[in-house]
Length: 435
Image 1 (tube, rainbow, N blue to C red):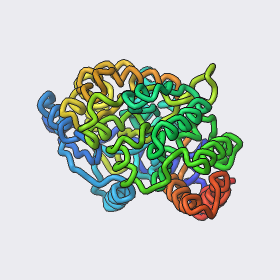
Image 2: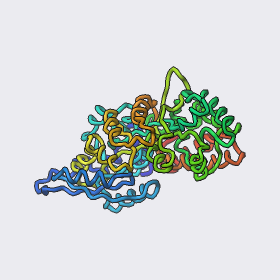
Image 3: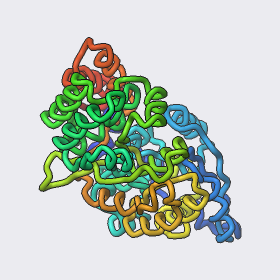
Image 4: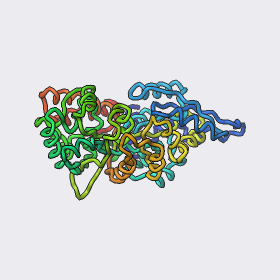
């Protein structure tokens, strides 16, 4: 029995999706029943900004399907709520799933296989790096919403005043960091984030690292890789030379407000938060491509990003997929999400970035079309990256290791080994083959 359980858990990894297929009943849902009502009502859970506005817009323009939205917390609390609801057979029809959390949601049997309904859609509309994130075991599980392509937001006014060229490579970034410190001894080019490891993980992705892969019926974990060591050594050098801040996040925000942190690295979606957090700096910020390791081969990666799937217990799959595809693949769905100004989502479908651009007030960025930058960055996201099961533990494990770095007890290149060992141990403890 234990062996069968292991194979079911490894259903993620190759031949593997049998557990979730059986759990979903391999059915198309009950929308086709003979006594189908004139209006099908479905439920939708999410923590994403403007989800209520999206729901309202869909309900106003559709008569055959109506959606009831419920705001849920993000992070572990939200996923725990979904898992418990599936067990209790009262889960929503449509669930929000971040790309990094999809393997775990499948391992727990929380989602239905929707391959027959949306595989061709995903293949035809989404770039390869995005397709890879929602496809496991040859099955497509969710429909992507956004691409958190990494970019560099920077204080254009301060760079121009100090006559510092905007860096295009990581070597140039280091040189610029030295010039920033020289121009203003209180200022640093950017922050070394002590708490949020997501950006750091994605910088490894950009460098060509591949932390998880599937080999046969087993997960191969390669967190401590040469590419990862390259990234860690680079940032350790910046920390050691006091070229980046090494302070808590709330202090970083104060330093940004004072003009003492000139760059924010992160997903394109961070534009909205930057605008909301620093309204007095309107017109002073701009966006550009993330510095690259190789000037001849620029590359980016993703931070965050979400998709939507049909929960295991839903009996209304057809209606759920209709809603999902509308809000992810149509101009109307994207416009509804962005019109309120609460979201700066970069749609994962490249041509919809133009729709997004029309709905985003660019005054904060001096009239710059930041979506053009994000769209170009999406086109150079490295392929081959795969999220593995247990990513929340990986993020948390890195955060714990960073505490040692922040106090000088350890250096960044040393953080990977313990996290890799613990990840393999945790996966094996869950009955998942890993090495």
